[in-house]
Length: 465
Ligand code: OOG
Ligand code: NI
Image 1: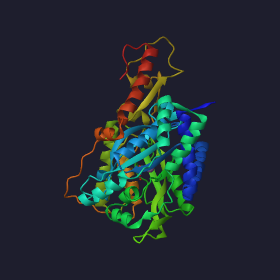
Image 2: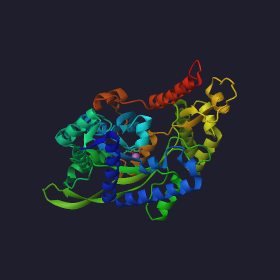
Image 3: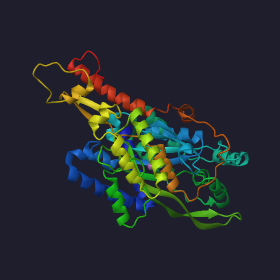
Image 4: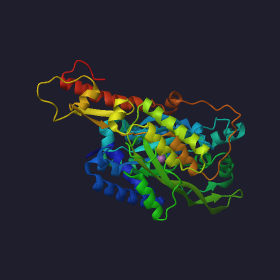
């Protein structure tokens, strides 16, 4: 019998999850259609340039999902399911700090890490875990009730986890096991029809709508899925023209004439979905909850720590200027700042060490017997080597918090007089049961590997810097 490899499992899971979510949330299916139209138009208009940050095949298939779990134990199980698909936890995001309203979670993203795997299928899932121990949100009594509720539920059937462990160990599954794994995995993220205990849900909702979505029900579900688009401003206009209500802004860098960096995201507003509610007297009535939505994103070049610091600084200045001039549009303020301070070309980003690139020998490099120069700038400038930007594969905490917040029904409550519980990447690694990888280290390694190869091919004494 034939076997299905990890990347094939990952690609198949992404497709099936997307089909499932399109049935559950039809506006998401519209979003996928419009994204495809936009991408085709951009490809037609720009040709090969449109594929500078990923082939059209990759971009068309590209999705990220968002899920939310309640405990370290559940997170470790999620890690096993995604480990089966060749996805590893990368990055630590503390949304408690990034959000103004109550978003009591810490997060990571499961994704493929090496270049070849990303090119085959870059499916990633932003995964958040509730923090019941944080006293700014939960008092001792609510924390105890919440932890007891979470401890008593089971999100993933044992069969799914056993198959996942096998797929991770053997890096493939026989066809029939693969089929069973995919069915169990997709159904673990479907919206449950089990009635929601209304009083419990409302109790948590008063603290935070996110806490209620996670800890108010006995299962998990996909919160949103996100296709990738090559022109997010165009997509925003087309969705609005179709009568779909979008959130107010596109999060992340402004639209501008320079290179796309990091990540721009927007979403349509969470829709009311029918959910059965169990009342205090045990009767069940139909109600609705508004938590799930569709998001879309445009990806740009991965920035180094220095590049990211510049991005964060500019974001801070946008905030300052926007509050000083309440009538000005944020987008205009941001664009003006970017035009002044952000390098306007890939070459300049590379020269200033603000972004990551891969390098390869130019086919048409000098062949006149001259010796190659030794710095990256010169190698590129004199036509020995071509640079290609590395696409940003991760997330932005500010944008993530913005996406969470724009779709919350209420602000929730938080007591800022209390000291928050501290979590970091090391703590999360312990909770997940595997190393949470540093995104910068991954990009730096990818860049360095290509430079080392260039050095070998040109017979340079050292790796060019
Ligand atoms: C996750 C929000 C973060 C993104 O794209 O930044 C996210 C959530 O709503 O659970 O998905
Ligand atoms: Ni998202």
